[in-house]
Amino acid sequence: MEPGEIIRRKREELGWSQAQLGNRVGISQPAIKKIEAGDSRHSKFLPKIAQVLAIPLSDLDLSLSGVVPAPESAPPARILGERDFPVHASAEGGPGQIIVSHEAVDFMARPAPLIHVRDSYGLLITGTSMEPEYRQGDTALVNPHLPVIQGEVYIFYAEKAGEARATIKYLRRVTTDKWLLSQHNPPDRTARDFTLMRREWQWAHRVIGKYSRR
Image (tube, rainbow, N blue to C red; front, side, top):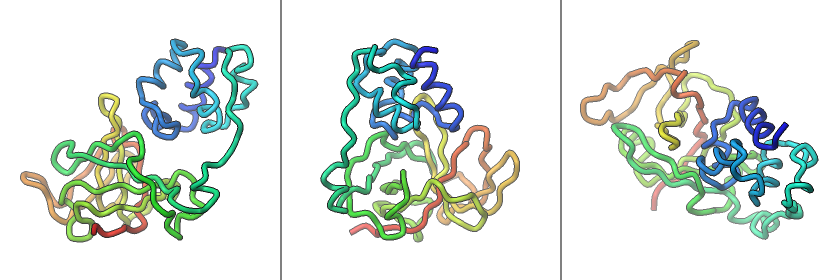
């Protein structure tokens, strides 16, 4: 089996989109698409992709592809325990929605509740739909691994046109096919209580707190 096919199958087993994998690796969704299609057989990011997906390097046959895996080493920030917590930016993407940057725009000291949580991150809030609880400019602290339960605030994600669309909302209830949500300060022509379809908005990452804007 070709390396790109192995990567695609493993990604789909984990329920990740190409954009989500790219975000974890630090490259764009189109780059992941090319690698999976076999158009980038000698990509320098193959070892990182293998690490993120927990694929043995031998399965990708990197020794024959000319790609030399980089030695495993933690960046200085992680060794020092400082400024290793990624913070992503966001931009308006429609009423109550945001577009999330694939790559971190900043790193800060890791919050104590997330000190050992893999893939946790911060997200700079754009928009006013959740004010006053979450104001524009606040940094939401996110644990993507917590179970989905009602009565908590989540960032819901959908992939549209290769972009990670998101919205931060309070979860009132969840059904087999819908998220039943609330927002504190509805944008114009939107309701306080509404639903999103889970087939489109497939991922929910729990917000456990925030850093207030300065």
